[in-house]
Image 1 (tube, helix red, strand yellow):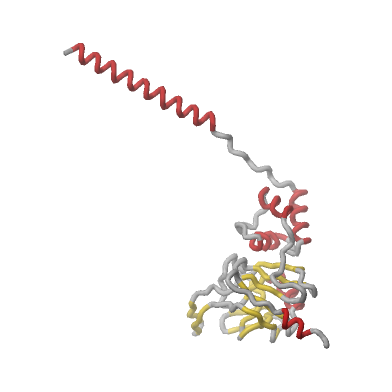
Image 2 (image 1 turned 180 degrees about the horizontal axis):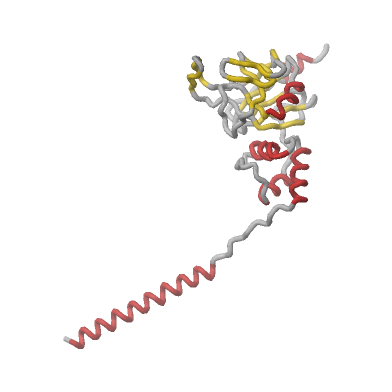
Length: 240
C-alpha cells in the first residue's frame, strides 16, 4: 500500500512539474514573439506651422477651428489636437470639394456638420464647422417644436447686422434662409447637431459669412440621403 502511495505521489509531482514547464515555455514564446509597441514621433514646431499653413491654403481657416473643420470634413475623430496621424492626413489631403459647381453659393453638409462657402466658379474658398438642428423635440420659453434643419435649396431672404433677439435665443449676424431659420454666429458650436434648427457658425467667422451672403444667395442643405442642385437657379440669375 505504501508503495502505491509513493508511486501516486511521485506521479503527481512529475505531472505538476511538466505542466509548469509547459506553461513557462508557452508564456516565454508569446512574450518573445510580441512586437514592442511603437510610439509615434511627436510633431515638431516646424511641422505644426506647416500643417496650419496647409489647412489655411485648403480653405479651413486658422487655428484650432481649422483643424476641427478638417477633421469634420474628412470624417475623422474630432479631437482638435494635432498629432502625427493628423499631420500626415493634412499633408496628404486634397482641398474640400463642393457638391455643386459652376456658380457662387453656400452648402451645408448635415452629415459632416460643415458649411462650405464657394467663389463665383463654385470652388470652395472657406469651410467652417457648424451645428445644425438636433432633430429632437423641444419645449422651451413657451414654444414647442422639432429642432429640425430642412434639406433642399433656399435663398437668403433677409439679414440683420449685429445681434438679433429671437424667441429661442440670440443670433449674431443672422442670414435668414427659411421660415425664421438662419445661418448665424453663436458662442456655442458643438461638434454634433444641437441647435433648434438654425445653422450655428463660430463667432469668429460670422461677420465674414454675413458679408459673403447678400440677399438672394443660394443655400444648399443636404445629407447622404438627398441633394438638390440649384444650377437652374444660377443660370436664371445670369444677366440676359
